Amino acid sequence: MIEFNWGDPHPHRIDRRLHKLEADRRAARNFVDVLMTTDALYAQDAEGVRMALALFDREATNIRHWQGWAARTFAADSDDNFAVEMCRGFGLNGDAVTTLRLPVKEKVNLVDVCVAACRRLGDRQGEGAALVNLGKAWRNVGDARKAVFCCEQALAIISETGNRRREGVALANLGQAWANLGESKKAIGLYERALAIARETGNRRAEGTILNSLGKAWADIGDAQKAVLFYEQRLSIACAIGDRVGEGTALMNLGITCAELGDSAKAIRLFEQDLAIVRECGYRLGEGITLMNMAYGWSKLGDPFKAIWFAEQALALARETGDRSGEGTSLSILGIAWAALGDARKAAGLHELSLAIAKETGDRRCEGAASYGLALCLHSLANIAKAIEYAERALTIFQAIDSPHASTVRQLLADWRSQQPLRAATPTIAPAARRNVADNGGLGD
Picture 1 (cartoon, one colour):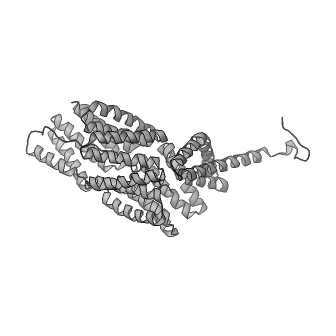
Picture 2 (cartoon, rainbow, N blue to C red):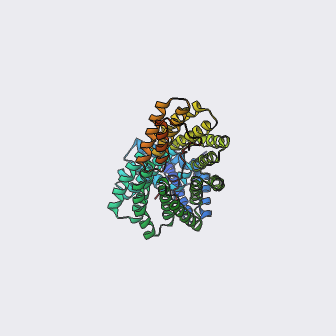
Picture 3 (tube, rainbow, N blue to C red):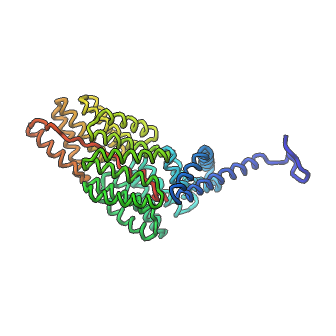
């Protein structure tokens, strides 16, 4: 029954369609405001991050519903300015929490609509910021080439607008995309420019994230000591500003470096600390990456059974979250573990799957590691010609990306070509998953 008060319009004269539209618009605007609140909370400290994530979790169903409503309305009528503004609002606000909570493909779709909305409104600053977020989302999917394309467009737009803070963010994201394609030296140049801007503008979160990226880049070209210095600076900033995700990232990357320097037991302790943090934050993508590294650590310690147990969990999470690069890395680590147990055929099949994904995503390090692992399996199966072919592919990749693994593959090829017996302790090359793209502290503006 409709309540009627004297002086109100007669119930039969109420335009129910207009009434519903006004209610829908109020709801959509309210949930954009919720995302704006999560940004303010997330920027505060560790307690603020927890509050931001808790707020998003409470309202996630409504946020996703009303973002979908805005996107459908915009698709149906590009002249509906309210829907266009809401699509922009949902994509530009709450980036930190949506990166942590949404499946990676859903995040791509959300920001892609935002880019279109900014273009429709002629909002160049918004378009630049949205393209940065879209590049980051494509990296998290595992498509580094699309990430480079988006970040280069973003940088061109942001440079026009003269926003130094956003310029630094765009440079750092572009560096991460190039790093994912194996271009570590190019990435370092971009990071150094971004770091100078972060310090100039007082952007501590971005400074921490860029320091992590620099550490990863130096580790990728074989300078573990320099990498440790950057990771320790990143850890110090994360603890100072209460950035729990950044703290976990630094711990994990320090763990990988410890494993590469031969202290796998310490590495596993650091991975366990990081795992507790990402689970506390409900960060599923980050949890999968940490589980990969637990598998990597146990593989380095010579326990293939534990390596398989963690790698299978990581593989399941990578598939759940749509992390294609993580899926390829997990398959490669599983291949190493099964080879250590003497099942060269099963290991070869896993490396082949990993290799296919690495080619699809442009992950050169994983492609090199999978090619090398497949070469070892084929050699064990007495397919010497094919083994040499895949080892040569691995060597070409490692040389192209300045990987320290190139010398290992070169020595092994020399042994095989001279028909020397396989060395008793042929080193494996595991594609450790340093967290870079997932560390969104400050690089989602």
